[in-house]
Length: 164
Image 1: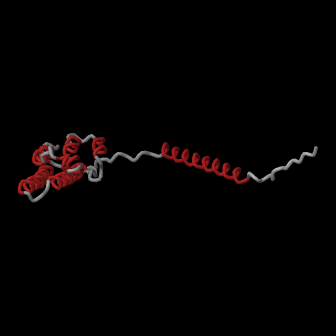
Image 2: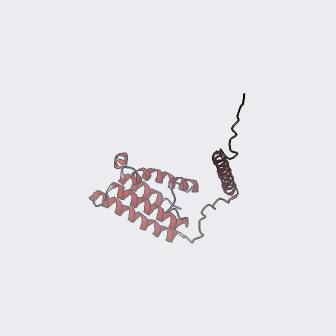
Image 3: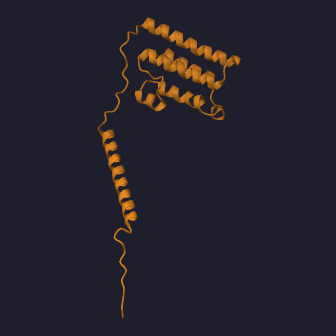
């Protein structure tokens, strides 16, 4: 009985071998890039905490600053009472005024920081004030219904007046 054996070509499965090798190589390169990026983040220095600039704030200059910013907040409250501005617009203006006051009084640029970054600075009463107007400033109007702009303005004026 004659038996014939048909041998397969040596590179008949070469497509699969190349595909698997390419996948393993891609995974290895991806893992290497991930590890390098992770090491870079570990050894990268954290950005320094914003430092207050040294400014001369004598009681006279600070008093004038307080009067100016309290006046700006009173304008917001008056505009809201008269219906000239909306609640959201009032809260956005209030936020800008408070941030501008803190920047001018301390030298720390809080105008572009988010709520968690401002909390990390540890400025007394500023984080509580930010908590008060953060939701009405950014949320939908329904979520801000229970917030009162006038009382928020009074709180902000209290913080400014007690600033030292």
